[in-house]
Image 1 (cartoon, rainbow over the protein chains, first blue to last red):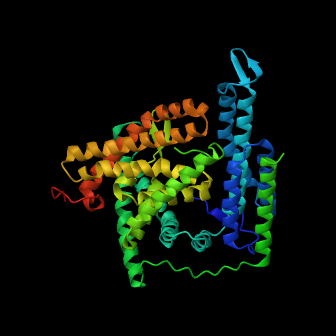
Image 2: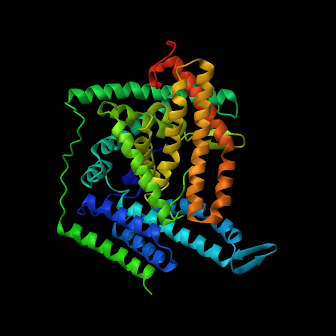
Image 3: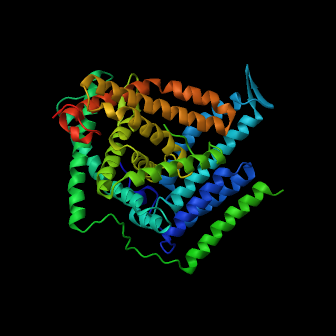
Length: 251
Length: 205
């Protein structure tokens, strides 16, 4: 049920790029792209994201599936927005008038969503989760938070198995989900049991951490090297964002 | 319930990120190093539980469970929910990076408010505890809808109708979440009262 990030978007390629640079690039690119309003600048940003997807050699199959899922939701906006936003009428369908403003807004949102998704898939998703966490720490995210993030990630698959085991046990006893109180009570109790076991395990983990000398400080042993090629990549991303900004604000 | 990327305006995203960062800061401050493992494990458990489809009439819904998260965690619900949303963005590409702040606020602010209002009743008399848990689960979804609605409306006034529809459409979910929260709190009172916040007025064990 839980895909490994690396499987979700192909192997982590271009390993010579410092993970810190990848994360920072994703933040800067996404933050900037979210602000763009003109279709030209958003389209340019989408073009750059496509370039990133090619550069990082993302597997086309999984990427297309992700894009398909997101664009399915966006199709709803295309049905609603043109008819709910007032403006210059482009198309008359009986009593419904599709406005130019509505279509433009739907187009903007669609291009933006695809650009942001592609950038996330290219820059962040393929990173091994632990090194992404350590990179976040080096970028100034508090150690406590990174620890929370990494521990949650570490135990996620285990908790999922635990919950699967509880659900299979219920299914063996003939439990079939329906819309009734019995179903809701069963789910609530399964959830309660999962929480009880999670906290039990957390206590064991806490003791194991204490045995290893945990004093509340998060140490990061991974070393990052800001090599020349990483800087080159950072410069390329900065140039692309700047180019989009010129399209947005200039001319 | 979360808002996809590309919909909200820049200022709204920025405000959401700032508020979520502030809440996360408070949550981290209140999170004793001793409690990191427990919080991480509960965050993972809630993440797993929220993937389950629960039947509701002809369709099925995902549980949000943010009311229960709030009741069990208090302020650290902020970092716990942010962690959950980051995992969701990386694993499933739901929500995405830019909407992370707003989406954290949508789920975590109601969780903390619910904690402040209702947590003191959970170890009191049974009927009151269950009513408080129901109220917390219900209110958490309702307030989440209000925060989401505000974010949409500040991004563009034409979203006001979408926002109202969003809140109305979640009415069955509010009732379901309230009920699930009450049932789960009832279970925990009997099985592991130590998990619930506050000092017991009656020894339930």
